[in-house]
Amino acid sequence: MPEIKKINHVAIVVSNIEESLKFWETTFGLKLDHVEDVPSQKAKVAFLPVGDSEVELVQPTDLDSGMGKFLESKGEGLHHLCFEVNDIDATLAALKESGVRLINETALELPGRKMAFVHPKAASGVLVELYQLIK
Image (cartoon, rainbow, N blue to C red; front, top):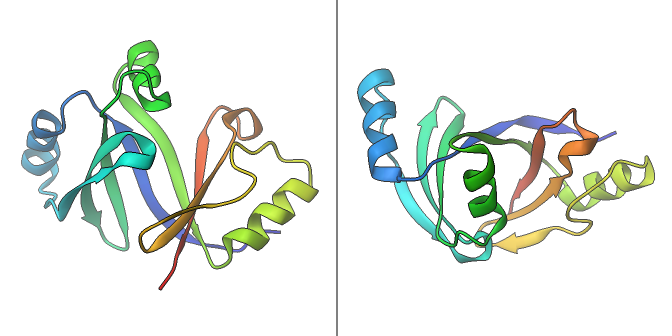
């Protein structure tokens, strides 16, 4: 069974980060930490800390990407929920062994982190990201 440390972030797909930031900063008083280009996901991401977690505003940089197609078909809104785990490789192995449908059977490595996605058909329609911080 996977060991979940916490909810790392909730990702919201948006068509325009700057416009969306106005709402989150003005309405809820959230403060932008930074904006990051994530070429591997063909997206630009704004990070808004909330306690030990974050709200991430994700803007596709390529409309032919998965995120771009999601935005086109479903519009802006909740994209995925991310759980932080201690050992993503062991978590993926355990999920695979128990028959959980995965998008990534092995973790993708990005600067400072490893990540993988569980297919939404396995989680009642919710796209779940698994995330491990690495040094």
